[in-house]
Image: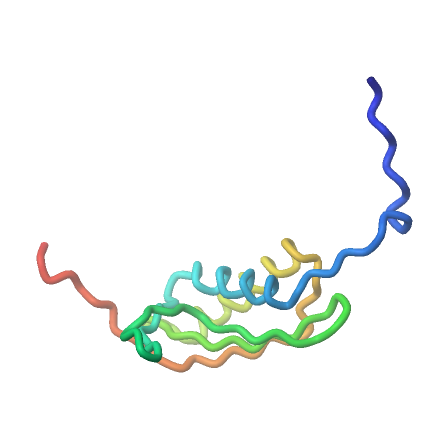
Length: 120
């Protein structure tokens, strides 16, 4: 049995990727960069929770603007790690969603020491 040919791309419909998906892709990309750190934050009524990078997404069509807030391990080269984060986020968002990152604002909100294990 022969495969059925697909209609032309412009006749197939449209695809919209929600900003929540773009946010998750950017968060995961940033959290995978060596030197970034998870932060313990108080969660209302629950206690402490560990959270990685937070990302806000705006823009329309295929152009997105990202605002990233993250913590780094101390002593890390802030400039180097942020450069790596920018590159990783831009590449991942463009490769996975085909959206163009128009602007990428990064805020380093904390420098956290690497916690050494008590028992060796």
